[in-house]
Image (cartoon, rainbow, N blue to C red; front, side):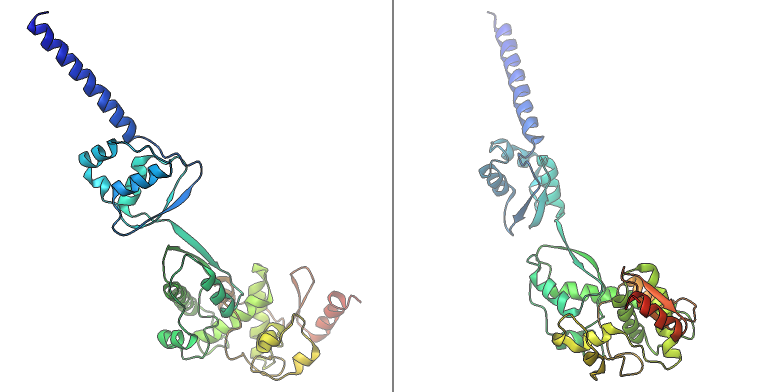
Length: 330
């Protein structure tokens, strides 16, 4: 064999070897994780991309190969991963994973704060959310921080689904909900109807909380609001059970009795005139809208039909008839 042929053969072997190595490298570069379902991983501060590959290999999610070192040598930007909590999609490509970690696209967790619940209910729910961090400041501290000028947080936070990253503080979540309520309430107040019997946005918030507790039927809210506005305009007591229940606090056992209606508390609207001193729940946007944009009606009464809706009346005679029909079944 001539020297030329030997050189050609060696060159051919080198070329074939290079092709094979590049093929193996590309196979690794485009490999996918072996996770059959989405999973959460946490990247601690200081953890390297090599350490992550070793961790995935131990979990048998990725083959541990020397190609990872080659990958990070040729494309060092892929090794610049950020700490945080991430969600791996099913059979996620390795490059997609590294790109997600490089951009710090952490997984977000939801918490739904439902309208109509009280601050004490929300406080417990927020405390029980394990992905949140830190302690909730005392009511007194939050009231001072928000400069509320009241002695209650009730009504001041916006119901919504909030999304947060792992370790987001409970105080930050509360501040976010407070700012959302401030923004929406001020906007709604600026667009309110004229001649409403409220002296401030806070009084509208109190009314919205009562509307929130009185009906779960969205289209009824402006009509409920109109009844209460009409009663305030005529200097009539609101006479709404949810305010009485709120005033009973821990003493309420699920049944409201005549004795409860006679008990004088700042929230018993059968005994006091006007609005109670604070909201009685966390009102949502629809209830706020209803309080500030009530229907135009002459109705002064409503009674539950038993199916979640209400029968409305303009006169006491009509109302008593509706009570007999829907409550007393006569």
